[in-house]
Image (cartoon, rainbow, N blue to C red; front, side):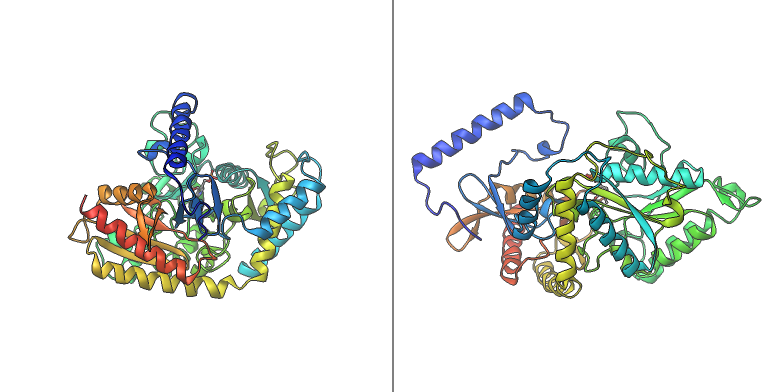
Length: 471
Ligand SMILES: Cc1ncc(COP(=O)(O)O)c(C=O)c1O
């Protein structure tokens, strides 16, 4: 942790504060409130970032435990990714996406190879700019291959907020004001162990699988024709570990059993790895933990370590062959932009070089152990769980079960105020609150986080919980 301004004199402090007030007043006038900035009571302005930390104008560090919703897996201002981007700026910074450049081909090749290694599957990659756009490309591919426009998706699932992506995202909040532009998915419950009626994960798994099987038992469920053997749905869109839904880890064999039923009824399996991909869970793709082969896989965020917008889909050859998905099937001016592909290629090289399959589960176990100790101290932590460095802490009332949204919200605000104590200095904590009841602290620290930083994280979490409880 580097404090760039170790001592700030009173006049300098006043000057920085007045500059910040001025910027915030101007933002109020000219920026739409339609994005997520104004979720915070007082929007925060940052000046600098490095490693696991963001810094405000006064040089105060904020330990980031969510890393831009897992887009910055390899740490802020990662020197190798930065260097790759600088080289690309000097070499070929711009190129229209109808032409080719080396980095695009090599990046696609590495993702194709990773899919062969992880799942033994042959396929192709198709790039776009953001996660939601890649989800839309996946929807196109499903529609083209199956002739079906209805999808299955999960309660608590998040696939983006463009119009078609919100049709398969479970929150009605994102659709209510805009009407339906695309067939809305049928949302099925996710096997959320902590909030299920059963304590045993195997029982949870059996229960939700049985419920799913019911759809295909006879024609009167309204979704399956036993005469043709076909279902109404083109695909199921799934996050192997739910992200925005609250970092929920399903029982071990749930997806394997679900995917088998889907396959038997001609329903494709689309694996949304936008938040959990690129070793967040200790495997390159989170679905690898569950012994399932996807038909289509969607990726984004951490592909470029949060540098240039780049996302994409991988699909099995038979779905995305040139005959099936011909030239111009999708287009976006900035898809496969050379700065994005150069950053992505460097990220893939780093992922291949370093042993994240070993280090992420080790760090995750250390962090989870800390969280379990915090849980003993604070009964308001109803549940903690984790897979690699995707960790959850579910905030509840003192009964350890009733969701405590206000408590989680106070923790978030307190972290942003930057008044927590580390030795003699004041520091901040960047948290993200998710979950069905907006009471889950979803922790996605840098995969490069050190033990000292994890120790600090837990000290700071202890402080915010204690302060939030007594406010
Ligand atoms: C699982 C998942 N899918 C899709 C998206 C949408 O990606 P984007 O915000 O880049 O459009 C997100 C973003 O949080 C996500 O977590």
